[in-house]
Length: 166
Image (cartoon, rainbow, N blue to C red; front, side, top):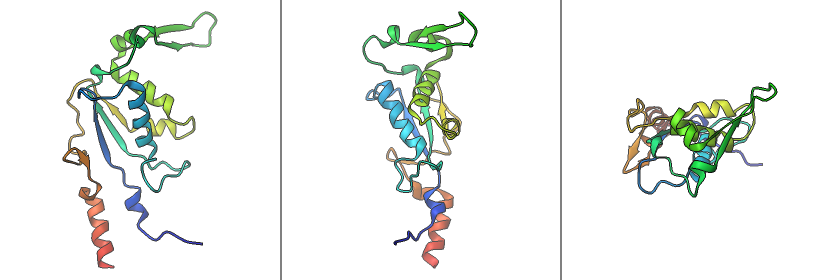
């Protein structure tokens, strides 16, 4: 039986990812939501386990420029019901974007892509959506040439220094 020797605290460190929806090569809503869901779950990490919450933070900006294909803006329906007879209400994607903004549409899509368990709401709290390009999490994003670098995080640097001294 083999055992992994290493620093699990370093592996569970949460990084911040930035997704800009105003760029010209943004994927459609469904593909974008599935990629964000994978990051929120932590499936891109080698320590991923379905019962633990090891995902990262995602900051999505420019949600007013959300891209959908076909006639989904007019034809896709969102339903809600208050459990009272005759209270089923529906709104299409265009109306939802007018009323609540593109961030709520993205949040609903990502919520549908996450597993339906106790961790879903905690994972969804790490998704930060903004209609414009401005957001208060700029100092949390660690980007070099458009890529996130975990090595630049202060707690990672201290763990690496400890590991080298051993």
